[in-house]
Amino acid sequence: MIHIGPVYGRRIKQETQLRLQDKVAVLTGAASGIGEAVARRYLDAGARCVLVDVKPAADLETRFGDIDAGRVLAVQADVTRRDDIERIVKTAVDHFGRIDILFNNAALFDMRPILDESWDVYDRLYAVNVKGMFFLMQAAARQMVAQGQGGKIINMSSQAGRRGEALVSHYCATKAAVLSYTQSAALALAPHKINVNGIAPGVVDTPMWDEVDSLFAKYEGRPPGEKKRLVGEAVPLGRMGVPDDLTGAALFLASRDADYITAQTLNVDGGNWMS
Image (cartoon, rainbow, N blue to C red; front, top):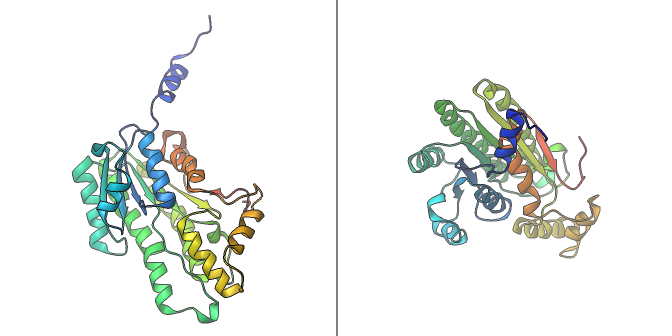
């Protein structure tokens, strides 16, 4: 007879259960792409989800209409607005009683030659990708500290945050800022048992990439679709990512399996960037 010790036995039992059972997760940019895919993975893992997007809540409710309505709350909000950030947290707590996980995903993209960059584009990208990311993280962390039971924060960066690119200066800089804020917040919140980590995707085939491809076509004189094909072929694993490729990392970092991981940004990019 094989003897399984009490600790190991408990671990086996835990791993047969849903990994995020009854956890409350707030996810931004949840209406499509990576945000939608991660929200569905969290729901499959037993979480209750507050789905945040600038699109109308009715659009989110329709998109997630196949899910038990008692486990999903849709909130239309703009993360560049202080009142909206406060409302996201208050609505989540009023409805579900707590916040355990923040998947900080809302972001904008733009590109143009550096000599043509404008103040307006700079302000718009930094408002969403940096200011909105930081102050929602702060607001969610304050709630987690008040609850006194720790929490998990996952900030979405990008391989663009690992290096500069000639046509993508503002976006690269915003995603580098996400990397830095993730490290600072992780150190500051460690005493409260709040883990702060990031994910840096590579090229991911989402609706946004159609816009990206058209911009490369404009500035590099390429036919439509060529840049998208080339970047996919250049990935060591031989293809662009898809949103579902990001969900495993997002689930892992939100779960107890990542309790001893903080201040890290995990590359999920098919081997594009090595660090």
